Every structure is written in structure tokens, then in C-alpha cells.
Length: 272
Image 1 (cartoon, rainbow, N blue to C red):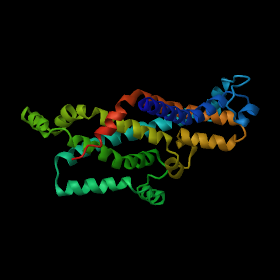
Image 2 (cartoon, rainbow, N blue to C red):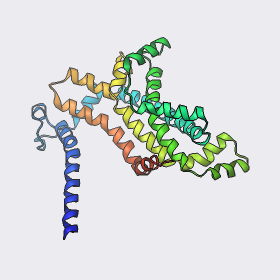
Image 3 (tube, rainbow, N blue to C red):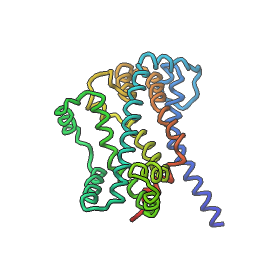
Image 4 (tube, rainbow, N blue to C red):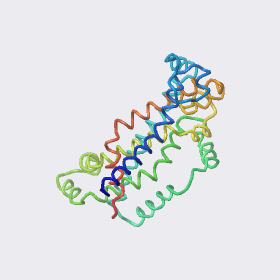
């Protein structure tokens, strides 16, 4: 009896949490399909008239296509370079445990505990003539993901037996072959987890493009939503449609790689 009551309570808690998460998204989606007056009331009722053409108008008016490709450029390039570079660095730190490598590891993961100082970051980019440029924004994104990726991947590599490396070296593997042919396939869950989480974070990032760009040509989709809302703050059905369109790509990325996330996160918590 106690077990049954406990299971019922657990299910009720899970259902409640799901409702809390789903309800705002449902409200935004439903109101994006309503006429202007109905959307302004922000109710949960179904639309009296369904206006799917709102999405086409928003894509055209908010210049979302350009914002989409900017977001894809920032998230795709930054995440690919950052995760691959962090994986290679973490491999060296995990296998070659010198005093310098240990110092670098603990120095890098200090970044997990400190916020980004955008004033200093802008000054550094200006010094290298990278301010208000796409390469500058990409470098900033890559830098921000290094602590988390190094921490997660290095801990996973530490759980891989060193004997695998030794056997591969005996068979004639060089450093790059050892990493890409032997170690990297074993790290797939962790690498995919880091890629998905960082891709989602960069795609949703609002502050970094806000501080590091002052041209609408460089705005990602999040900035396009902000700019569009400033022009159409009374047209809530447009704003809601804009939000939905911005969320769709990152939801797709998450759904594609969700099976790797739990395994990758738990593997990253292995103690040495």
C-alpha cells in the first residue's frame, strides 16, 4: 500500500513538473496563431480563427532567414572547433599528468565559477581588431565553452584504461591516430553531449551578440527577436510566432542527440 501511494505521488510530481514546463510553450504557440486582439489577452483558449500565415509574415518582416544563418554560423563553427579542441586538450591533460598540465587543468576549470566580464572582453577584441566582427564573436563563444568541455571530457578520458593506448602505440599508432581512431570513438557520448549543450547555449545566448555586435547584419535569431519586439511590442501574435521559430532549431538538435546526454553527463562525473 505504501509503495503504491509513493508511486502515485511520484507520478503526480512528474506530471506537475511537465505541466509547468509545457504550459508556457503551449501559451506562446497557441497565441501565435490568434488574431492581434486575442493574442494580446494571452489566454490559454484555442483561437477562434487560426492564422498560420502569421509565421510567413514574421519570417519576412523580422528577417529571420538572415538571423538563422548567423545563429547557425556562430553555433555550428564555435561548437565544432571548441568541442574538438577541448577533446584533444583534455586527452593530453588526462594522459600526460605533468605539473604544468595539472596546473592548466585547474586554471581552466576556474572559468566554471566566474562570470564573463564583457567590458574586458570588448577591450581585448578591440586590441586585436576583432570587435564587431563574426570571428570575434565566434572566438568569444569558443572561449566560454572551454571550462565545461575540458572538465567533462577529461574526467571521462580518465576512466578509459591506459592499456588501450599502449596497445595502439605498439600497433604503430601515432598521437593523432591514437586519438581519432582509438580514444575518440569511445568518447562519442561525452563529445555529443558537450556539442548539444554548447550548441543550445550559444543558439540561445543573447548577451554576447548584444555586447559584441552593433550591426543588424551580424544579429543572430535571438537578437532578431529582440529587435522585432521593439518594433512590434503591441503585436503579440507576431512576437510569439518569432519566439517559436527561434526555438525550433535548438529543439530539433536536442531531440536528435538526447539519447547521448544522460550517458555523457554521468560519464563526465567519474572520479579519478
